[in-house]
Image (cartoon, rainbow, N blue to C red):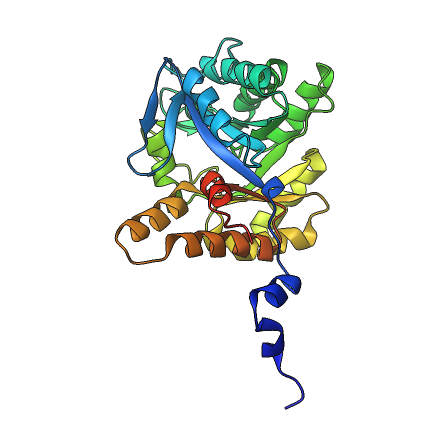
Amino acid sequence: MIKRPRRLRKNETIRNMVAETVISSASLVYPLFVMEGSGIKEEIPSMPGQYRFSIDELLKEVESFASIGLKSVLLFGIPDLKDEMASSAYDDDGIIQRAVRALKARFPELYVITDVCLCEYMSHGHCGVVKDGDVDNDTTLELLAKTALSHAVAGADMVAPSDMMDGRVAAIREKLDENGFKNTPIMSYSAKFASAYYGPFRDAADSAPHFGNRKGYQMDVRNSREALREVELDIEEGADIVMVKPGLAFLDVVRQTVEVSDVPVAVYNVSGEYAMVKAAAQAGWIDEDAVIRENLVAFKRAGADIIITYHAKEALEKGLLN
């Protein structure tokens, strides 16, 4: 035989030399949950190793990984007050706004991204204003834009709308621009599917809808052409980064998005994906570190530029990237 592919697999040195997929710490974003109170570091039962932090404990958590190369976080707020207009979401003294100010004061080089959605702040748990039993798209846009602006004013480096309302990227872009934040980028959850993989997150953020479901605004898991249309619309409206969520079950959509997008593509390795790895590892059924590494490689191999993952901290601590 003249052609022997195994020649380039002989040892780790040559395998690394010819590796087609490389992940760096700069690719990773670490999601974090912040809540009211002090001295709180509360483990999330369905997400072992993940916590709800009060702001003081959040600062300690960031301090713990500041030296290992993790430079970007995505913040989710858990407010005490919920109402039918999500007023805590855009309150200048809201939990996210105070957390952003505290993080940027202590860690000015940390890149802080904020999730822009209303579900955690709504008394009914839906992602927008409910009228006649349905989420009203256009009324919701103004509240989303106000929320994004309040995050930018607090010091957020990037805002990330996750609500799946039509036109929200344009509404947020206009609001930011007219208030002097034309350089604040938008990472849009462009292809966000109505997925069963979100269960642990809804436990973590106390954001499950109190009636119905989110299939009227999040995407049907059976559709991929529709996902590309959502991506294209968000880019037209001014999205700087587009995202596919969830990740593992939608790697085909990640690849298709990369092929049509002229902006960077993010993927969200969601709570259910994380929880399954942890549960299988605790049962002794898988090599946890190897599976984490393989999953991260899969996202990169599919073409994602950015990986949002609850595994970010441990992947860096354990040297799992390459």
